[in-house]
Length: 356
Image (cartoon, helix red, strand yellow):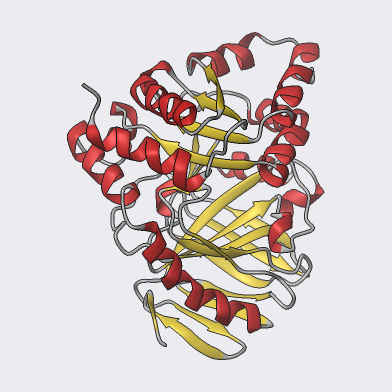
């Protein structure tokens, strides 16, 4: 008998997030075999909706094997089959079911960056042309990252996903209206004073159609507008590596100074991936106050009410962004203790709570 909460999540993914229609091709990707219960329920729901589901299940160990054994030729080989697959799907469900969150910790970061460049065009097709949704399936590895038991993590996950997303949508529209009218946004906090241009950029409310859980409003700032500095007081995890105490200084939109208390070399290597990696591709404001526990998982953490996240690298075209890069790395700033957000000089948030 399947877990009722898993069945509910599958229903939300297929019928709410993706709104699968009869005849549509649905790709179901899972990062490991552990997610089998959710994969099967999504498969069922897609069939019931009249779709044509296809399933890809990976083994997490494959990435480490690839980076350790692949020749230069293999590292730079473009997987045409994956591009064909992406182009010929209507909807994509990506399920993360991590076995080991640090599996790539000892892999050369330059190899990861080079491979990201190779796969860039595939990512762009998925992000910009397809309907897609990303979610987690509870695993011991994910539970350990959050200092929870597996049972506690299951409660944490399902309480964040299996909710009334239409109600969330209505709340986010208030923030969207403020941002859409704005020209400049300023973020202040501990060792932080950063100004971004947002004129003409479209604020996008996120209420469960792409990420699950959700709960943010994001936009792509004007590419050459970032001025000032920011200190990220929460860990930033990317490609399996944890970077602590990131400090970035911006001038005319680009990162001119970068440091970190841990894994600084990895940070700099990612920023040097390509020209676009040193520009901001996204500013997001978290509005999900039901997620209070930092989990080292950006899928949850960027939604925490009272935080902002700024991603270096690739922007979103549907938000008006023009920056191109092989990377998109979200970094989170907690504003709940002494932070504030201003739009055109007017404070809209103080200590993580909106002022309207």
